Image (cartoon, rainbow, N blue to C red; front, side, top):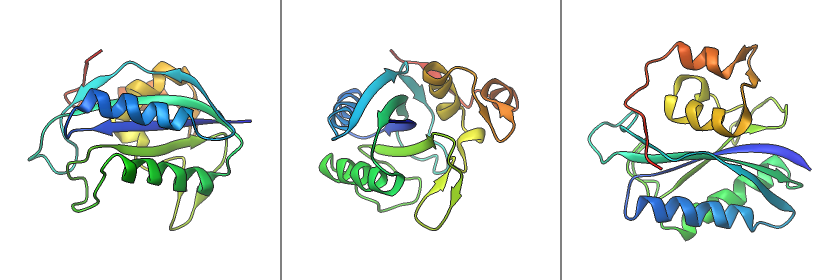
Length: 158
């Protein structure tokens, strides 16, 4: 089994329910076990500012699914929960991103790992710290990356 960290975000509809349902759907994937869930954080929008605030969290799973197979399964979950990709960084019922897939480094047009923007987003770093401890990404601890950026309007929701 491979350790994988996934970011979840929602700013449309019942945001909390969207996160819970998505986490449950990920946990029920074949050959996959949910290991840990972070706290839930409320955050200001990133990128496109004229939209409602987000709820964000991270989960840690153990899986036998290969990276691109997992990516496709996560995209299916997004579609099942009403995700429509209309505007880059726009509102969404659910957003699921693979942040880290074990120690895999890959850079192709379909999947970049570790996630290319995880070290500049407090709404990813804070919940990731909850479930991963202070792991090292690109030669630096998560807490060091977090120290380089502002809190970006993030607060504990639940």
